[in-house]
Structures are given as C-alpha cells and as structure tokens.
Image 1 (spheres, helix red, strand yellow):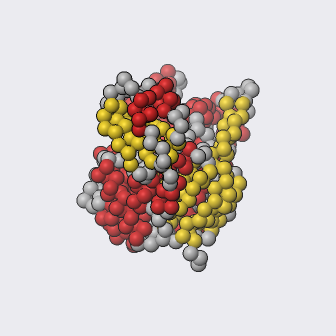
Image 2 (cartoon, chains in turn green, brown):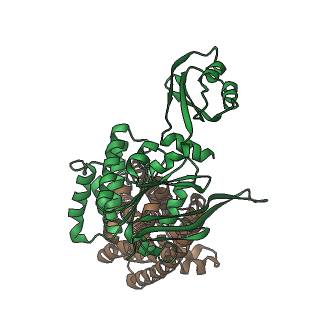
Image 3 (cartoon, helix red, strand yellow):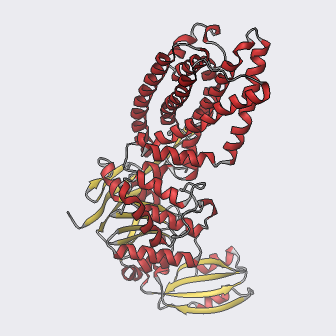
Length: 323
Length: 251
C-alpha cells in the first residue's frame, strides 16, 4: 500500500456536441487540458476555481463517472478506467444542490437503499445508518420525507449517503453551494472531522474561505489547467508585492472601471455588488500608492469607506486565475 | 438487493400525485373501452377477457413509460449518477426500477377489473382463478425484465420520450392485448412471437377463458429472461458509452 490515494497524470477531457440533423455541426469543447496532481492518504485536498474551470469534470473522471479523453488516473492504486468497480468500492461522492435524492422517500429509506447498493452488509446497515445520521446531525429526523427537508438538511443527507460504506476517498463537489452560512459552517466542521479520522477528501469549491480553512493543499484550476498548487500560505505568495485598495461606491459605470484598470501600477480591478452598492477592489504594485488616482477616476460618484490592506488568499486566487 | 430496490422504487413511484391520478383515471377509460368495443361486436360474453386485456395494456404502459421515464427521472432527480456509481453490475441497479414499474402496473389490472365490475357489471368468473393469480404476477415479472432491455436503450438518450411514445400503441396491438392476433396482418406474426407481451397476454387470457396457461407463461418468462440477458449486455455497453459521451447527468 502506498501513501498516495489519488494520482492524476495529464488528465484531459473534451466534450463533443452535435447540433442540427441534416447538416450536423460538431463542436469540441476542451474542459480539462492536462491536469496532474497527487493526493496523499488522509489529506484534505482542494480544487479551487471559477465556474467552468473544469473542477467537476476532474472529479467525475476520478470517480469513474466520466472516461478521460486522455491521460490516466488511479484511486487507491486502481485505474479509474480499467478497474472501475474496485475504485467505486473505495470512494464516496457528494455533490452540492437539491438534487440526487429520492424526494418522496424518507431519509431512512434513502440511506437503506443506498446502503444496499453500495454493499453495506445487511447486518451492519442499521448501525451504520444510525452512525452517519448522528455524524451529520439528522438523527431524529430520518423518518421525514426528504421533500420537506431544508437545503442544509439535504446536503447533510448527501454527506451521510456518501459515507455509508466508509469510503477511503471522499469526493466533495461544491458541497456548500447555496447553503446558508450556519449550515455551511456545520458542513465544514463535518468535513474537517472526516479528514481527522483518516478519510482522504478531495473538495472542489469556489469559496476561498472554505478552501483556506479546510484544505491541507489547494490546486487552483482555471481554463482546464492547474495554475498553482500548494498550501494556502504558499498560494498567498502569488500576491506578494501587491497591495489592495478597497472602495465602497454607489453606481460605478463600466467606463470608469476600464479607466481604473488602465492606471499605471494597477494589476487587477474588480467590482462586486454588495447590497445596494459596489465594492471596488484594486490590486496594485506594493510600492504604488494609487488611492489618489483611483478616487480621481471615481469623481462624481458617491463613495463610502476607503481602505488599504494586505493581500488575502482571495487576492492571490484572482492573481493566479488572471495570470 | 433487487427486492429492497424494487420495493423502495415502488414506494417512491406510488407516492407521486401524477402516478396516482393516472392510476385512478386510466383504468376507467380502459374498462369503458373494452366494454363498448365488445358490446358493439358480436361477442359480448367475452367482456371479461377484454377487461383483462385492457388491464394488461395498463401494465405495459406503466412498464414502457416507467422504464423510459424512470431512467429519465433518475437523471432529473440527479440520482442516475449515484446509481451508476454503485459498485454493482448495472443490471442489478436498473432491474429494480423496471420491476417497480411492473409492480405499480398491477394496479391497472386490478382497477380495470374492479371498474368493469362496478360500472358495467362485468362478472369476475375466471375459468382458472389459481392460474390467473399466478399468470398475472408472472406476466408482470416478465414485463419488468423486458423493461430492462428498453431501459438499456434509454440510458443513452436524453429524449427517450420520443421512443416511448412510438412504442406504446404498436406493442398493444401486435401483442394482441385487446384485439386478437388472428385479425392482424400476417407480417405482424413474427414480431408478436418474439415479444414477451404476446405470451404474457395469452397466458392471462387463457387463465380467464380456460386453456393451456403454463406453456404460454413459460415462453413469456423464457423470452423475458433472454431480454434480461440482452439487456444486461446492452446496459454494460451503454453505461460505458454514457461515461464516454457524458450523458449520465444533465448538462
């Protein structure tokens, strides 16, 4: 037995689409363009990237749902294409969102069914179901139909299902998407506990705080390629030599943002809608004090708080993705 | 595992408002259809036979739409990927679903006979009641296995409904569920002979009218086991293709 739980070597995946009947037009969309990484046993590894970066495609190739167009991958030493069933015995898969459960059945029925499917021995099923329900905090609610569950409860049920057969490797594909902050915190605690008990976890997310709090190492993926890989602290170095100026503003037109991006010394500038206003975030060279120029570019616009700070993982992420 | 799966899928299907509504309304229509068809003809004494045939049409519709629709439903619910991820042969995962659609179809037979008796006074005097009690579950089991072959085709298609709709009426007709095969054109004979629905309908009809039930039921089950074998091979193939073509989940 090696110390490696997941090995991906130059994984590639292209989606082919066809439109039209008489004159079919075929399009090829490369979703993953050569991804390589390894995850150690017991490690909590994060795949961080924007929507459409290829995170889910990578996970689906590793968990056998998709066959790679090229490259190889092994999970617990088994090839994901040649030894599909061996891989499936050892993995759990949890994805975010409302779907993936039998709504008109109770949580107990859902778990009983998937325990059968995933090969939990009949004599152990009752005890195992009880354990996972306790673990995710659904004990006492298991006889209610899933259709009456909140999103957070469904997500916890997803996790319970993924853990039924005590997988060695757990794939979590954006598990906290759409979950309220309190439920998300509980989810993070559950995931952290899993990793602490020796389960290897591969987590995809686009929430920086989640990745920073949970992951031993993080790979930033964009455009189907890994752009950076390391611990959160190592990734933050990608924003070294920068400073971040944040300005609360109300109604920033596109041309002003373009003008700010064109200022000498500006590395990145982004606008985020926060409540009724905007948060303008400008990354610049550490030795450039752009506050005066940026505020000048925003003249005539109602402004709120203006502050300067050191770069965070999120700033490093933006720098990596846009590099 | 098959039993637990079939039971839970039956439970899930039978809690659908849509399914329940269909199950309440369609048997009335089918019983009426059978009654008026045979009253208008020269054989009003064969109304029970017609009602049973109409009930089997309900089972077939349930299996056909259930097998195609259930696979599609698994996609919509996002459960298809979770099912396929199970470390089991795909046939053991999908068969409980198609069996469940057969089981929910049982209601159609019971309800058609009940409505026929209540509304139109069709007497429930079966020539061989015991054989009828065996033939109907046997036929439903067979159709569940046949459904697997259909399901194997549907897995690859994102719009399986089109195929489902085109198969419903021809199979009713060709299998002789309502109209005797003898009145159909000769070229339909070979098609009828390889369909388990034909032999299942014949076995049930013979239990109603008196006749050799067991050979028909035996052939029905044999053809269905063959379908199960073909479905298993097809499912293994299409599962791999679906993983290659990324059609397990909705894009």
